Length: 91
Image (cartoon, rainbow, N blue to C red):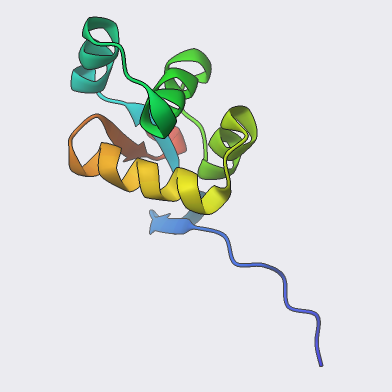
């Protein structure tokens, strides 16, 4: 059986393939400064605020949370407008 590499989250644009990065939106930055966020959501928000745009893998390493948990938290943050996916060109 052939050795198949793991699948990475990718976006396609302009003929280039790149990994998705996430960053806080203006709303997320404001909320992070105004309220004391705790738990997994707080850890991810603080990591994004400290290290800036990064991948889910980098967030997982920074927060010491499982990749699945980080993805779950990021889905909520993106849905609520606190964070967004960005391409390397947007950073």
